[in-house]
Amino acid sequence: RSAVVRRFGQQMVSHHGRSNQEMVALAQQTQLTPPSTIGAEHQRIYDDLAKLRGSAFDRAYAQAMVRDHQEDPRAYQAEAQNGTDPDVRAFAARHVPILQEHLRMAQRLPQR
Image (cartoon, rainbow, N blue to C red; front, side, top):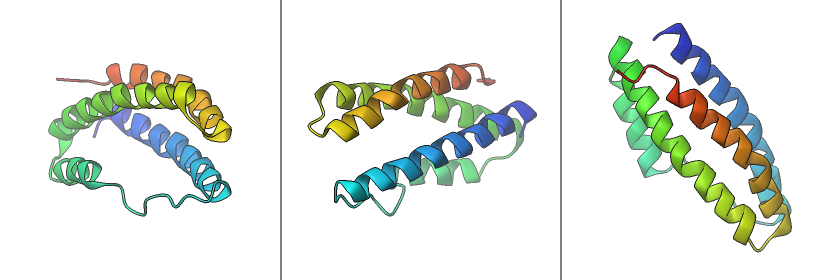
């Protein structure tokens, strides 16, 4: 893996780790049970990436991160505008700009 991709990955672990901790606390506060797995689609992406090495990994990871971070801000924005729980709406609104920045960062990764 290139140093650029490695740094981006470390940032995603750090940022999303903090976000997930906040989300779990919010779920408990609202008496919701968060999923205990990453879901089938994300597991497929993980499995596909685990088979790759070097520049092939870098390209596939960058493409996956762009796709994922194109979808996330839209979903969070929709929740921020239309959600029924004010705490969940606030959480989503706080994270929209962070996810948009993640998209910009992912788009700067080597795609070829």
